[in-house]
Amino acid sequence: MADTEVRRQPVKQGLTRRQKRRLSRGIQYAVFVAAVAAVAATADWGRLRNQFAQTDIAGQMFPDVITLALKNTVLFTATGFAVGLALGLVIALMRLSSVGPYRWLAGIYIEVFRGLPALLIFVFIAVAVPLAFPGTEIPGGTYGKAALGLGLIGAAYMAETFRAGIQAVPKGQMEAARSLGFSPARAMVSIIIPQAFRIILPPLTNELVMLFKDSSLVLLLGVTLEERDLSKFGRDLASTTANSTPILVAGLCYLLVTIPLGFVVRRMEAKAQEEIK
Image (cartoon, rainbow, N blue to C red; front, top):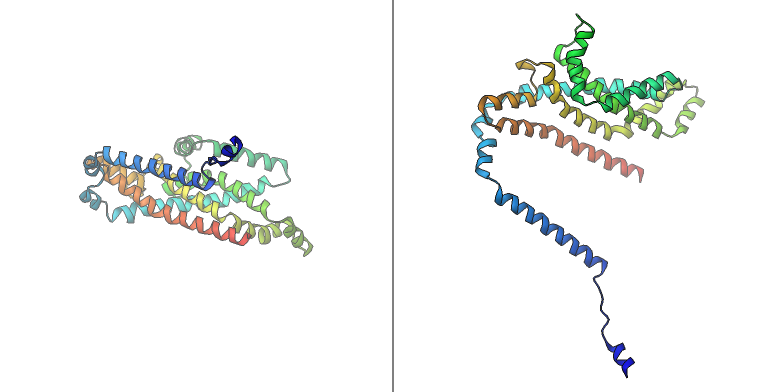
């Protein structure tokens, strides 16, 4: 009798795994909504609007913010990326060389320039180079110095990207090229490097985005009014107007370039994954 009553008692069951996931997501959504509501309720939107959203001040920035500041930023980035791309490829090949001193020199360069802040590299170019080589001018003035600074920074990262891409190409490609009579150098240039480029396009585009943001350090080189980048242009106008709206507009101009580039990177990564599958 007692055993029958025990068997008739309902068995208590806990939440299923699916129910636990739903509960966890619900709690996370609730916390997120509560945090947003708290920020929206406590922020002084009037002061923020007055400091960052003055349409008359923003209007004063056009068209110079596009035709001058954004153009200079893109030019600094493009030339720096070109220098970094060429130098990074050379350093990557040195890193993969069978000659010991080449590998050591490339390794030292990569570790030093990846370890130093970009700020110090620009200071070095602006101050140390003229002291070390008096009377020597870097071709291109500020644009040449900016290309050199950004190129030195980018090359250290691109070299490792190139090295990984070259090593990702199947070894059979080199062996097949050698069997057809290609020299090692010709096989590398004609067969291996083009395939490596396809592999490393997404990380190279990421590096382009990083250099685009690092171009704001060009102001350390001493720029003229016609050479100002987005960051310098926004800061100068913010100081003149005692308002932060120009800084916000400059930031939006950065996003105007970086967001499409980020979308391109994601598309290339997705395409690469599809090709692998």
